[in-house]
Structures are given as structure tokens and as C-alpha cells.
Image (cartoon, rainbow, N blue to C red; front, side):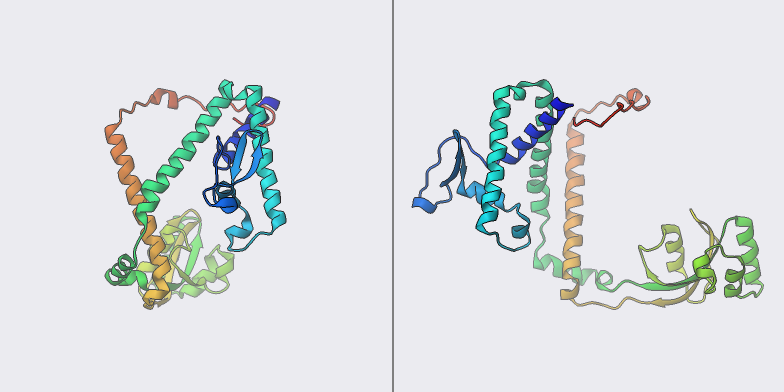
Length: 301
């Protein structure tokens, strides 16, 4: 366990220090305040002002548009120095030559490289312009509206047989509200005649929602089965979404377009890579039982 923890500390030090400390002397091209000025030296390693300022962006105050005082900067620099000292000491121990450590570092390297590659090839290309947003806004007026809200009442029972019986009574003239109060097992709504109030899409389970939004005002649905049981739904009222101005929906449309472009680019890239690659999968191994987890405390791998 001790060895595993040390591997973890060293790997974290590698990740954090990799962009903060560089090998070799750096000199300033603009006197004492240049971005390549060395702000700290740890044995033979340097932390330049530009590296320090870049790492300083991790401080929460700066991330939220604030500022940091000298004491905070000193504390952060000391943190970087400690990380570098740990890294140097780890190298002296030869742990970087350890097979397990090398495997762990290689895995971390893959994650960083893939993340940077994704940012360059997917995120950067997914950006949208003002013209893109206005074009989408004009071509998709429905998406610029407020969501449609529906107000429904429902009767929930456990069995199809009971639901059929209730539906037949309603067809024969029984009041929906009376049937809800008498039979529904949804105790929160039955006392109100099954009334659930207004809701928009995304708030109910899909089967219930799909049926509710297809109804006309006053219409009663066929039986709708969900994981809760069998529902009979009545549409009480519907509020059509009102159109919103471009400035109101601009941010929402931007997020939607960016996510769509990211997904399309990713799917296209993955499909292309798979089509050109030779991939073999041993399904027999997948059919085997899952390996047993080791007993005791979980270890970092």
C-alpha cells in the first residue's frame, strides 16, 4: 500500500509540474519583468514568471474574475516548489523506472493527449458565429419559443384489468375526477381528482409525457404503462409556448449548436478512425464472469 500511495504522489507531481517547471536556463528579453524571468529556482530547475502566471489561473479567485494578494501568490509558489522537490526526490529513488509507475504515467499521458487533441480537433471547430446563430434562429422558430406546458389529471393503478374497468366506467359517463379519488394509488394527486398541475417536457417519464402531449383539451388517453403502473390521463389545459426574441434565446441556441457540432464531429471522427483501423475483439473473454475485487482497502492503480 505504501508503494502505491507513493506512486500516486509522484504521478500527481508529474502532472502538475509538467507545465510549471522547465529544464534549462531561461533569460529575460525585457529586463527584470519579462515573461521568461525566473521567479524561483529549485536546484537546477526553473519556474519562469510566464509559467507561474499560467499555473496561477488555477486559484479560485482568478477563475471567478477576482484578484489574488501577495500572500496567496507566495503560498501558491511554495506549493509548486514542494511539488518539484517531491518530483526530484522521486527521480533519485528510481521509482520512475518502476514498471507499475511507468504504466500509470503512460495512462495519464494518454488522458492528457486525448484531452488536448479533443480540444483542438473538436471543441475549437465547434465554435459558432453570430451569423450561425441568427440563421438557426430564423430557420427554427419553434425552438425559439417558450416550452409548451400541459395540465393533466391521471388515474394510476397497478393492474391492466383495473385500468380497463375504470376506463370503461369513464366511457359510460363516470366523472374522471371521481374515478381518480376512488381508485388512484397516486396519493398526492387523487385528493385533487388526479390533477398534476402544469408541467413541460422533460419533467415526467417518457411514456407518460408522450401520451400527455398528444392529447387534445378534455380528451382522455388510452392506457399508458410506465414503471409505476397503468395510467389513464386527461388533458385539462395547454399553454402554447410564446416566441422569444433573438437576444433571449441566443445563449441557449449557442450551447445547443455547439453541443450538436461537437457530437457530429466526434461521431464522424470515431466512425472514420474505426473504418481505417484493424480492431479485433475476443467476445468469449467478455462472456466470462467479472474478476473478483480484492479484499481490504481499495488501492490506487
